[in-house]
Each structure stands twice: as C-alpha cells, then as structure tokens.
Length: 112
Length: 176
Length: 148
Image 1 (cartoon, rainbow over the protein chains, first blue to last red):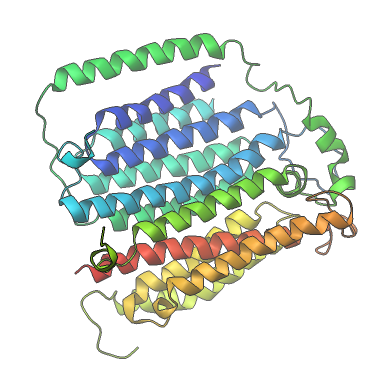
Image 2: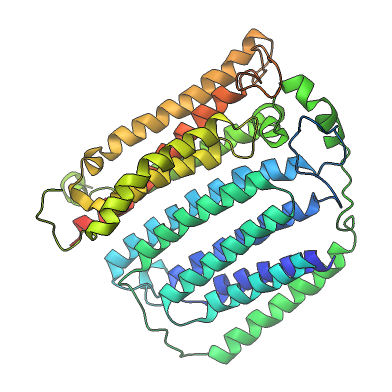
C-alpha cells in the first residue's frame, strides 16, 4: 500500500514536469519518469512474498512463483517507451532547427 | 523496507531531474532514476526486466545526451509563475488523494490474485517447452501483445525517418 | 586508423577500447537472444545490446567509418526482414490450426533446441529491435552531423 502510493508520487512528479516545465527536453524527461513509474507499478502488483523468479530450475518444483504476466507486459512496454522517446527527441530536434529554441512558450505557431 | 528506500531515492532523483537548472545534470539524474528502477526490478524478482531496463536506460541516456548537448537554455522565470505552480500542485494533490482512495481497493502488496496465471505456471513448461515463463508468456500465451509491440516499434521508426528526412525536397515538389 | 583524425573524433584510447570490446558485446547480445527461453533475457534485451555494440563503434569512430555508410535504407530493410520473419513464424501456427500456435516439436526442457517456435520468434524480434534502434540512432547522428 505504501509502496503503491510512493509509486504514484513518482508518477505525479513526472506529471508535474509535463504540466509545468517549459523546456521540451524536461517535458520528455517527465514522460520518461511517468513511464518508469507505471512499469514499476505493474511489477509491484505481481510480486508475491517469498516468491521465486518465474524461471524453472532443475532441482526445484513449481512452487510459489511471482506473477509472470505483468513482467511480460512491461517487457514490451520498456522497449516501446524507448522508441517513443526517440520519436519525441527527433521532433524536438526539428523544432530546435526551425525555431532556434526549446522553450515552448516561444514556439508561437503551435498555439492553436 | 529496501524497496521503500529505493523508491524514496527514485523520488528524490526525479525531483532533482525536474528542478535542476543545467540540462546535462538533469539527464544524469534521469539516469539515476532508471538505474534505481533496474535495481527495484531485481528485488521484485524480475531479472528479465532488470536486464532490459539496464540496456534500454544506457541507450536512452546516449540519445538524450546527444540531443541536449550544446543546447542549453537558460530557464527564465517570468509571468504568472506563482499562480501556475500553485494550480499544478493543487491538481496533483487532488490526484494523489483520489489515488489513495483507489489504491485501498487493490489486493495488498505481496498477495496477488493470480487466478489466470496459475494455469500458466503449472502447465507452462509442458505446453510450450520454454523454461523461462516470461518468455513463454511473451511469445506463446500472449503473442498478440508482442505482435502489437512490433507494429508500434515499426510505426515509431517510420515516424522518425519521416521527421528526420533530408531537407530541401519540400521546395521542389510543393506546387500547391 | 588513417592517422589524420578530425576534431570530432574520439581519442586513441577510446577507439582501441571500443574496437576490442565491440565484438564481445555483440557475442553477449547473441547469447542473450539464443538463450531467451532458458535464462533471463530474450529478444528485446538482446536486440538492444546488439544495437549498443554498433552504437559504441559509431560514437567512437565518428562519421568516417564504413559503418555509417550502411545507410538507413539497409537498416530499414533489415528491420522489415525481422518483422516479416516474426509474422512468418506466427503464420506457421496455421499448420496446427490457429495463429501463433506452437507447432514445432517441443523437445526436452532445459535444452538449447527446445520450446518449438519460441527461439525463432526471439531471433526475429532481436533482429528487429536491434536494427530498428540502430536505425533510429543513425538517423539522429547523421542529422546532427549534417547540420554543421
């Protein structure tokens, strides 16, 4: 319970960065922190006390493993997070070339 | 208990990454968050995720450093700074209080439900032949998820190629 | 190695160290991919490690290497090959009845050649992730260099 709440605090720090910061690189880092906390929350949900890693061994029976499904979901999510972050950085490089700044309040033409 | 300390470290590093002025130091703090996450995965008995997070964090740091080098931007404080920060913090407090209400309904930490996965664990080795149950889940039981991941990665790479294409072609063919 | 290095190049120490370690990193990535069904790892982690081996070389040796002459075109094509391989492995399941069915023989557990189609899927995903991430990095670096 406390761990879940700490995980949500981490998420809210990322959200604060996305909402409040004006530098695009800081916003991208906020998105990365949010994705970290969501990944950690998934794995926390699947943890079992005194559980083993979900890999069979020669000498041990199949007893008391942690939940492998959240780990499988998060495994794809990590790589997708990297690709999405690279896409965001590519867009930010383009914006820097076009406007000469990374400040989102100076990028006028994006204002709708 | 170790997980609490690790999470507090991650929160501290995240605040540092958000609030420090220098962009390079900020990127390094983000790296601290990522490597602490790798350690947390290792403590939560997820070695596959620990390996993946470690190498992904390295590549992520390299890409971020290449993007932010020589592009430092002085952070100006102007306008309605107090009002904006106050509104954001109020919103985050409301969000956290509602999340506190919602989190009480979840199963407590360390006692997951594991209704579906019991079958996977018992019959996984006989059905798929793979000893690593995470691999069996990713590539056999839930392979549609991996197919979607492949599609998303493909789309992201196509997007990057489209965004970063060579300049100058736009002026020739743009008749309209 | 040519003796005249420009301002963008790294020092000799970095070049030698990365030349010596790149092959080891590549072999480690292949090991992670091939043992994905027996040990922690798998296609995703191994693919990123393979991408890191090439990124290491690209950072150390700069633009003049033969590596950057592998254009993004080749990288994109190889990535498409990985995706098509994964789909082909998935379509193999129709021999057994359904999409993604594990039709090949399971073999004996704890052996390298076991688990049916899972190693094939691991190899294709490793190819796709590694080449795709390397293509992303190549695009970013080439863009950065060509601006100046």
